[in-house]
Image (cartoon, rainbow, N blue to C red; front, side, top):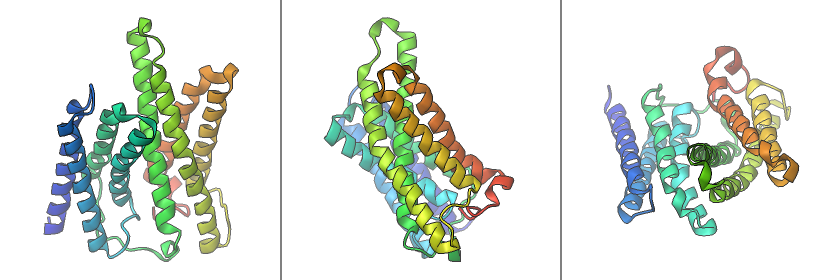
Length: 264
């Protein structure tokens, strides 16, 4: 194990530990120690991102390990935005746990810290495309967590009502996520045309990204249509399962990842 490997593992563990330590301090209401621990976790993740970039000599967005770190970095700024803009400070524990999970996952995967960009990735679309998707994925993870928490709460405490604050928070979170997801898909099409001369090739990654985007569109249609509102939760959960397929399963199954996105 090299010194770089030791540094990377240490930063992953330290950042995840800060987020997990913050979680119980945020469950009833955001406390100052909890927020400080969240900020510390984010700062350590940011340091890890810088280390990844210095070691690679490239913007560190190009493999699953890199994007796990980028994904973890998205949660705290998004929490700050939603807390200030929409009054969703009570969602802090969901953001803390969600930020820890990609870092924990990165501990158990191959970490190609010396990654180099292949020719197809030498494009100005590279960073904005990946970053837009990571922002949308982070928000989608929070949204589905809120929905599952609400469904469990209603099941356990049927007399407590439908928890409208959870429904509202889910909607606001996905309203912020959807434009980023749309930009990610459109920028990917423009990038594909630049790299391969075709906007859309229907490889597994592109197909599942379109399925994911369409299912989130179905969620919005259900959410805003009174006769269909009862199907909104189902549409959102199916959309998130499609997102997980896009992000993880397509890369893990050799037959699927052998297409144009095999480098991702």
